[in-house]
Length: 409
Image 1 (cartoon, rainbow, N blue to C red):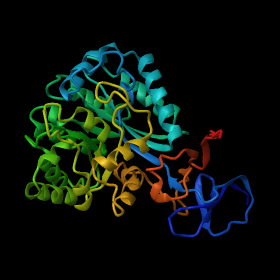
Image 2 (image 1 turned 180 degrees about the horizontal axis):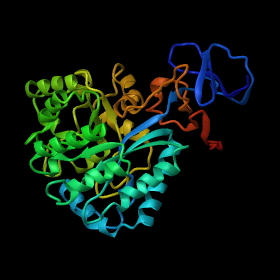
Image 3 (image 1 turned 90 degrees about the vertical axis):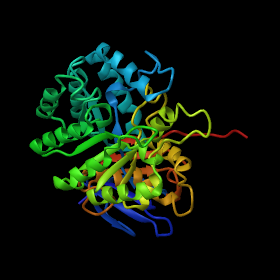
């Protein structure tokens, strides 16, 4: 039988022999030293690195590319929320569609094959953006798997009518129940309601959690205990969680231990958190990023994600999650010889686990979601920020990069 794609001379791990990788019917059929079967498409990797498809586990497609409409002049989280709340009622379906589509077409060529996007709704804007993102999920399903989070940015209790909309969003097809305890009151009741909805529809939960410079009014411990109580281990993710960076080890360790027991995944969002954080510090400015190393070393499933692209929360970005991971390396002191290899999994295996992807990874029988990187050293897969030469989704080539650079001497 003829293979659909045969990738020859592939590097999967540094220090190991090159292998051939055969793809058929959307799956990885064979990985071996030499595959002799014919194929409709043969790609000679020439020793370059192949990795699983990159996973963008926390992004907001519906409010991307609006930084020029009303800038966040103070750079604070408070103004970012205010500016966005003011702009949202002006968003039309066509506007959201075009911006989100443009953002997807920035992200997909960079090797992302799965996305979890938070999509907002509230009584002021209705479901305009939410419906549009569901539409794009269907339109782009051959290029990228999209999970849509029902996200109440303005809170639930403080924005009357939102509670009913949460249930409506689930009926409309949301994949995940979202929440934002720090922007609602009381936080524990917000979390309780999110669990009530998640249990009703048997869906995972993804919260914007404890996003602040100081460790005041934390609700992560309540969330972890609630997770264990409800038997929801492994189905909870949190984004930001920056407040933990302000805790001394004797207070932080019990929280990490509890999170590990609850199997809560953390999406660190360094581009946004560095931009918005520590705005009141006049000197000795904090990094205001969740303690990636300590969470990692404590057994927490840590991921790195983009969050926002060119809006009031993050007025920059080009959709390349490798650049976000590269940013995390110096910020979280992940450049050491033992640390650097732990970063790539934070944008591949870890987020794949966090968002529940099945048959993920380079293994015979798994889905053929793969990226051929223009580097021959896997450890350099991030620091080189290499070109993504081929992106393969469900066994089909979706992106081919033929860019050529010529140096004239």
